Length: 397
Image 1 (tube, rainbow, N blue to C red):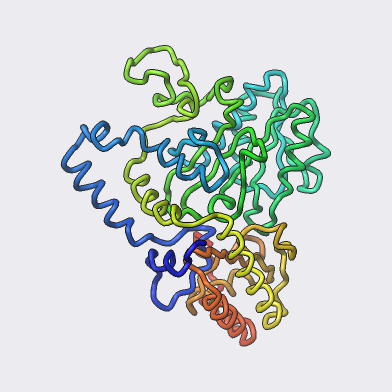
Image 2 (cartoon, rainbow, N blue to C red; image 1 turned 180 degrees about the horizontal axis):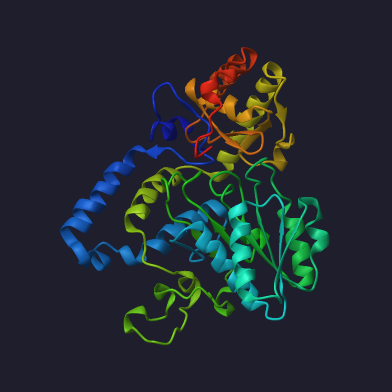
């Protein structure tokens, strides 16, 4: 049984703040400072370039990948970590298109995270007029799968509404037509009980700065089904994806296994901070996390709907159909969220009118939820959001 009282004590949480934005950026693990200092002083400082061998920097991406694998139901040596999520998305899309040869369509839905769509648009534009990106309504995704589709890609949990997709149904339809499926796990890893092995997913990507608490800009990860990996051309052919990078051959020959999906130099300092968070994750069971998050979101929805009737729930009411966040629409949502933040309740806003709250059992408990409801109720009932200082848009919402 996971001990969430213990895990909460492992995070630096600012005094007087209820943090319901771990679905955007996880808080700082207390041990991360010492872990990063060790990497800076004892490894980079003392070892300098020999740290690649002595400190095992070169092996870090796959070792960290194996620790993440446990949280997303992946087999060992099927995940590697490094680079940004957009780079990982582009690599996965390009690799899928090349693997599918004569199939020219990438298929996604209009609720997908825009950054993923931008990466696909860039790829299609680069490949020429024979290729196309088909963006359809979410509920029309399956009916648009056909023999011309190379790959379907979508974010398993909708970033705006928190809706959890019926991934198995999409996968079943895709396999019947021969299309590949690429899952974006940005709002899944560390939040829900995804099992990539049971789903038999082809490829997946994800970030580590949200529920996995790796810190701002922490590296992303790539998963490839072991049945597919050795026939997949990584397309974005990085030096560290070469079978023998230190032979410095002018001919690219991909490595065997997940190593072929490695691209650039490992972000050693970022990986060190992520490892500190994964030390906490090693002590919990993702099924316990999922059960606790359902309890917290149910509590929040019930309280907000009781005390804040002006807010409209857009997250699925059935907990099986949502991730670990709750979203409400409100015409003045941006100003209301700024008022929340000033009063010690941190969530975030997504255009045009969505107030978004994330629930992370590792550091959020039922008492926090009750306090959050009380703050939100006071702001909404007194219309504190009408203060002009809350109307001015900041760069990051």
